[in-house]
Figure 1 (cartoon, rainbow, N blue to C red):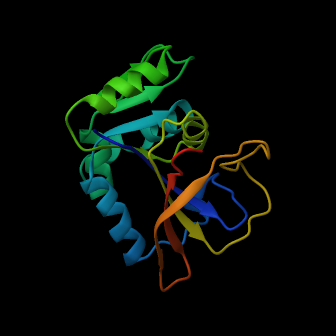
Figure 2 (figure 1 turned 180 degrees about the vertical axis):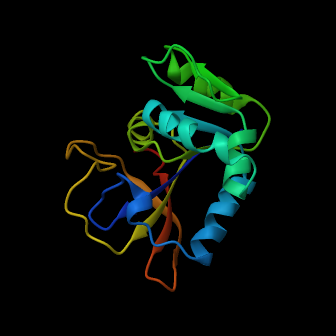
Figure 3 (figure 1 turned 90 degrees about the horizontal axis):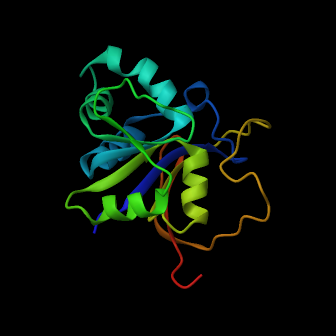
Length: 181
């Protein structure tokens, strides 16, 4: 069965908003991102990330591995407000998200990758639909901005599956929901 795997950059104080403004990327982060791409053959996006990506990535064609992946891979978009999707290869998911994602996971293929979309990641984690959470934790405190976990009552037990410290101080961590919690 396929897995739904999220990949997010997060500051030390939990901010996920506007990562291009503060991310500390290097060859090690690039390696992790390329690995996620290689293990995936579908993309899941929330409305805001879809809108941002649809404005930026199509114009870049296949100019980079990430552009090629995003432009040429089937995209599934979670939104109750969008009526049309202009980005080639995009499909709008309907009202019964849990059933549609379960069906999508049951189809043959590689992982379903969520690049960004922190609100979607948060909701899928709370609903028990996220299989893996890959975080690049950057050693920067931003003080303000949207966070992956906004509510202190949102408790989900996770277990560490892998971790690695990059030479620039960024931590790459992989968590999975803890069985039975």
